[in-house]
Each structure stands twice: as structure tokens, then as C-alpha cells.
Length: 246
Ligand SMILES: [Fe+2]
Ligand SMILES: [Fe+2]
Image 1 (cartoon, rainbow, N blue to C red):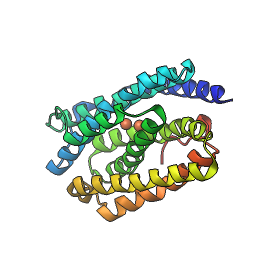
Image 2: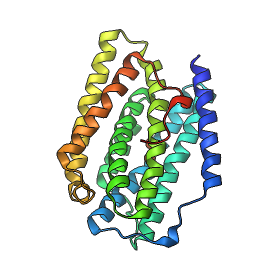
Image 3: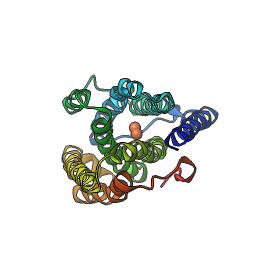
Image 4: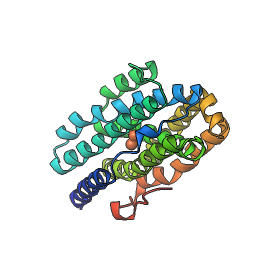
């Protein structure tokens, strides 16, 4: 049953890879008008996207399900594509990328210490924050190229959430119900803290795209409720029912 679920995800990620190849890249020659606060913010997300998922692969391999490991590899390829597109967007706006950022270095170091389940819970925090961030960027950047890149990344992140939820639902199902609820309540608490940190750190950029810090934190918290319940009790959306965009 679970294995079929991951096989469906392999199909979905491969189909998406083909869709991406057929569509081609955005037209980078169009250039981008990015205010400095947006450049600084996108640079930090670019660093995060670059590292996203790489800590997962060894653990996915050791989990003993080659179909899941294959799906995880395809997922990581999508995250790397996000980093690539953000780097090209920055270049189109006349800006470079950062070598690294302290928050990302901490994030990666902590994740290396974790098992697959906790790694995925931490990764899910990044995914949910990313959903709110790229939606804000897509809708408020006021630049065609930036909106297009953010829209493409957002569509991918929307699919990543149920992919991770499936594995977490399987992992957590071994715990009694109150323990599952406690884990997901703790996850939502940490997520709110992460949302708050990002809202503070990226406040000027969020203001530029028309989203207040408070609205950003509220959005992160609101969207996590159905995810927490899917992780704890299911059902988890299957690839065919995941909407391509919001
Ligand atoms: Fe991403
Ligand atoms: Fe993602």
C-alpha cells in the first residue's frame, strides 16, 4: 500500500521533470527589477534551497525502501532546481548569490544529527514557510520574471508537502494516538517559531511584496493545521489529487 504510494510519487516527480524540460526555463534575458531588500531575502532563500534535501538522501537510502529512496532523489533534484532558478533570477536582477548564511548552516548541522522521521519534520517546517514565502513573492513582487520563478517553485512545494506527509504518517502510525498528536502539536509550535523568525528576518522584503509580518506568521500557522492532522491521522493526498498551484 505504502509502496504503491511511493511508486505514484516516483511517477509524479518523473512526469514533472518531463513537463519542466518541455516548458523550458523562464526567459532570463528579460531581466528583473528587484529592490535591494528583495535581493537580500531571495539570496538567503537561495542558500536554503541549495541545501534542502541533501541531508535526507543518506537516511532515505538506509530506510530500506528503494522506491522511497528514488522518490526522495527526485524530490531533492526539484529543490536543487529551485536553487538554480533563484540564482539565475538574482543574476537577471544584477545580483549574485551568497556563499552561505548562518541560519542555513545551523539548520543543516542540526538536521545531520536527526533520524529520518525528525529530519522530515524539520524539512516540513522549511516547506511550509516556503509555501507562504513564494506565494507572497509570486503575488507581490511586481516583476514578471520574479513572479514566474516564484510561481514555478510554489507549484513544486505544494507537491512536496503531501510527499513528506505520506512518509511521516507511516512513521508516526507506530505511535499511540496521543503521542502522535503531541508530536504534531510540537511540530506546529516549532513551525510558528520558524515563521516568526523568517517574518522578522525578511520583514522588509515581505513589506515590499505587500505582506505584513503578522499576516505571514498567521498564514504559516493556518496552513499547517490540515498538514498536522494528515501526518497524525491521515488521509494523505495522493499525487493525482494534489493541485498544481494555488
Ligand atoms: Fe524548494
Ligand atoms: Fe520543497
